[in-house]
Image (cartoon, rainbow, N blue to C red; front, side, top):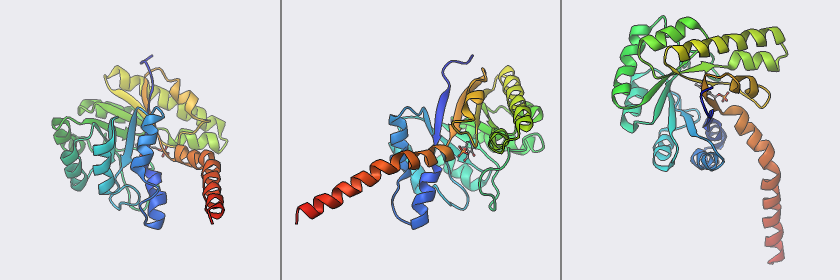
Length: 249
Ligand code: PXP
């Protein structure tokens, strides 16, 4: 067992809600500081090419404000490489990105593009960033990641989580076994093993129980749950202010 399992909190969807109105709130940096205070071991933010949630200024502010490591999720583009080299976050997680996708749908094809990925990560490694590659639970991808000198692989848990929530127990078990096998292989090759995507209260336990796992990155479910658990106190506070204003008249 690899010691305490770290939790990276992805705050992208705080920015999604903010951007729906074009206001300054809810502020993802404030959410990141709350996450740190609540026990997150790191913060993850994905600066997408289309800036649909996190923006460039958010990354600057996160770099200034955080006391825990920032895991900067980025596509394999020159623009993102330049931004990462300017900020030098603790970690960069390279993800495939398609403009039309709703979220990161699959893992990087490192095996097919080994030389290109190796060239792309070289300056990031030299700049001192821990390079993580977001891959499917596939031994060929793990082998390639190790060969090109990545420090970390993050295993995509989306298919497992979807199979669980869509009630397909066989697919769920198959996907879980693939994640376990990929974690074992990655660890045996000296890679640090992370996992993420789609994780919920219902799906976290079997992933967290994988002995080689060192970090989980969780976003969408946590931000949704924060709305559900935080709505009642937010309404009470608004009620209190309304009533106080009336009493003061
Ligand atoms: N890890 C990576 C590499 C991701 O791209 C994402 C989604 O942005 C996550 C973890 C978090 O996934 P979710 O928001 O579904 O918890």
